[in-house]
Image (cartoon, rainbow, N blue to C red):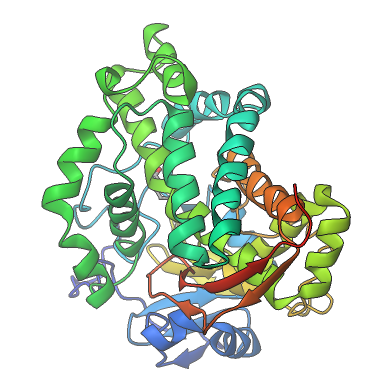
Length: 416
Ligand code: OVM
């Protein structure tokens, strides 16, 4: 802890001064207009240097690939246990008991991490692929009959909120509450603004529901949840930790996959050549999703907290500094990605930061990919043309980039 004189906290963290040589910027990255259309902000952020000082939050932000990668993958200097939002958990109590994964450091993190990784290992993903594909085929068959639909409401939201709870083994699913809980989790990362307050208003209904839904008696003993509780049976983790890991599945696995699937539909509709290529080779679905993640990282930003005085790219960073890492911006950095703003399904964007980097990287990424692949392959097989049927609308969330409306029409010439 610093022995500097006590200062008022700003959004729950100790304010720092601008380090020498770092541009001060009075922009609000959480301005709804920026959250809905962040590319101009990202461009300016990268142009200002490896870091900027956000004067209204008295903290740092980064959006170039190199430094964002460095901060995000160095869990020793840039810790997660002090929270991955603006609030410093060493100074203020968070809104919920901290995640044993997202908001933890080694060594405690590593024990539970092993279990969640096992619960979504390649053999587990392989065992749920058929269920995903059948669900996707059924949904797309229905939409082909409707012709005109909302890609978010009728597809991107329906799919993960039904197939993922089933894969986990949830007994009493409630898709709306899952989405509301995700909205709390991801808006809580930001400042105490309108987005955070309106998401938090659902807490009294949603928090007791999700807490109960994660308990052993509300889960099947097969599936992803069953594997986690088997680790509790084996004495590897406690019963309480098992419940907290199931909570992590539902925290991290719903809003993110809804966002990714909707953005992939958007990309395919906006790029008819890419859709034609996908139709010719449906196994391009995976690359298509990966490129979507690069362009529209579902988690646009997370913070880290400097746990000591250090330096990145020659910039001195003092202990306690919050650093807002703009993952969405790093994935669009022209210095790293040739033609960064072009959607190219043949790119193979290895190293994108949409699933994070380092010891906290997304343990559910292969489940997310399997979901998206099932949906995109079903579309490639059963749909001939996709077109916008009105303006897509982007939503406002303090850490998730997402479409809230995507009016589409589709055509099917051939019968499948
Ligand atoms: C968790 C959690 C919550 C939100 C996101 C996330 C992207 C993890 O509760 O562990 O990872």
